[in-house]
Image (cartoon, rainbow, N blue to C red; front, top):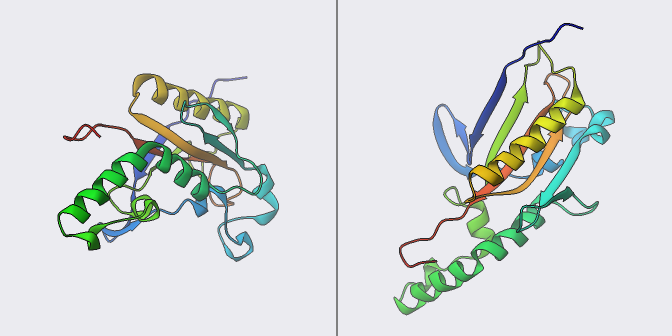
Length: 188
């Protein structure tokens, strides 16, 4: 069998962009974990949804399959609370002390804010015309990419990811959602 070369592409962002400008609205995790009525999505073949794979990562970076009944949104909020709760409490306290209690936020608001929402990357090998033929190889590439991010960039925290193989007009692809841990000037 002749070795076939295909191009890998990676696209990423936090916010929906229309006409080259950010809408200020963060990407929702509902598309990634199919947490909506797929019968109403013209680009998804409902009979193929069972072929998708869904993974979550804990605070140590250990990846496991997503539990049935859980959602990426709930998981991401748990992880945001784990990573950022102390920062948010201190930030809200500074707002109260400064007489700006209207600036206080919830973790849900932080998670959905355009500046602090999870970054989403879409990884694909090939395209809709030149499809990746080896599904297991693609799954392995995604797992290696997640491990490489964890190893080479310790500030990156993968929250969750999915591998979609249910979109008729699209190639197999992965949605990876992540956040970044850095200390601010206050050491938080």
